[in-house]
Image (cartoon, rainbow, N blue to C red):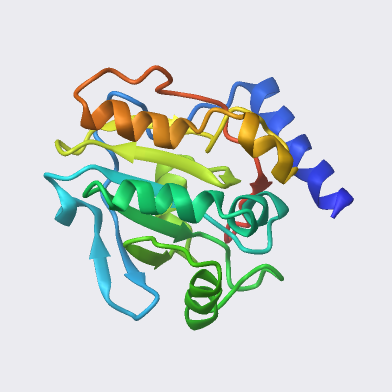
Length: 203
């Protein structure tokens, strides 16, 4: 646990230190993609044009992801958004050869056990969608507006730690951003620093 936390924080530091730019840029069109959901059905991002969409990069093997699921924070954030008509797509870009890889049925079962409420769970084993967005960590969050424009990219909240106790003190950037966007307001924080475990992409 400690080793994985240190690796994740090292990845965060390297992102900051190198100034690595995201492939998807806030204020620009969100890259379209087509992925299979956990049931094998094709899901295309542009099919949801006309609605707000939250994209969540996830990996149940990551302690930062478990922090937000085990505490109920991610499921609650999902339900808050979907209850307002927002589409929530959870994307797993972990490659099949990784020890963290979870097959679609097992990932769906894990989400169910966590009482999660994404609109769909998408498998991105080839990493095409993740790389198009420049997703680097789990979780890594994005919000797309009804016009297909990216309006948020970054972390789930303002405290980059694996400690559940920090959730109550943190600003939930996704919940805040969704609320502001639905109210027709500009986002207070449109781009923040993501934190978590590095995504295990296919090389």
